[in-house]
Image 1 (tube, helix red, strand yellow):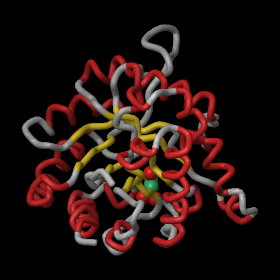
Image 2: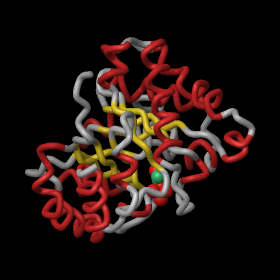
Image 3: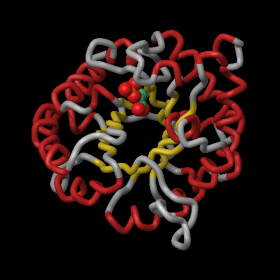
Image 4: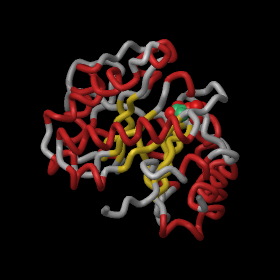
Length: 255
Ligand code: PEP
């Protein structure tokens, strides 16, 4: 198995003002300095603060991610931010298909796949989110839903998908305080890796990082990271505080 460097992403959603974004970087970087060489750390603020965060993280190994990107390079798309613009700002990563985009803003698989295409054409690292709703899990449809969400990846070669990251985020676990058990997470992560192996290639599957997200906190990060196919964590609420997110990273690495 090729090595997959543990990856920790903070999704700040629509939280924090400019002063909070700036104030996060120094304490978080200090808290995780000794593990910075054996992990990758990514912060995803709202688009208006991306520039400020690119500046604030200069000289650190912390990466900056957007929370979404438009499908076109430019044009009449009011409210959208293109992948080209993100690249222009020095942003290297983008979260796509987050559950809140899919369910609150009704982004379907076609739209998420179009965003993916735009992101990879600009060379951004996509964090491609998938996950089932509670009623889908209860109806034993988890794997069907996840497979449908993954299908768009098939349109691209592994050379183009390159550093793709997949994030498994069960909708019922996001912001609810109820995380998937490590066993539940492992089961879906293994399914995702097998799907990638079968539909793209086994070498690509072995090097693709699959993150878990959904009510991750310092108390559960090491158990989740102990699972064979959990390569990192995508964290919402508990990533808003630099020391809490720092604990998640450090405990996750001690699994
Ligand atoms: C998320 O927003 O991606 C997320 C997993 O949120 P939370 O950690 O708050 O459940």
